[in-house]
Length: 72
Image 1: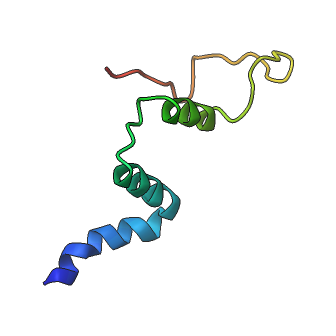
Image 2: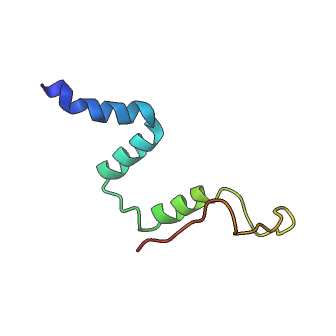
């Protein structure tokens, strides 16, 4: 039925409403997430604090814990 087709959409909305509405709005307005000002705003949201002051954060070793990778 028609309701079965909307179930995954509703489950995503309930589990992550802010992310869902952000994706919905970007699709509705046809925003490209790789263009400015959207890209710069997303980069700013990913890094909420300024790392310019080295005294706030002690140096960390890269030997353990999660590491970031770049996929092209």
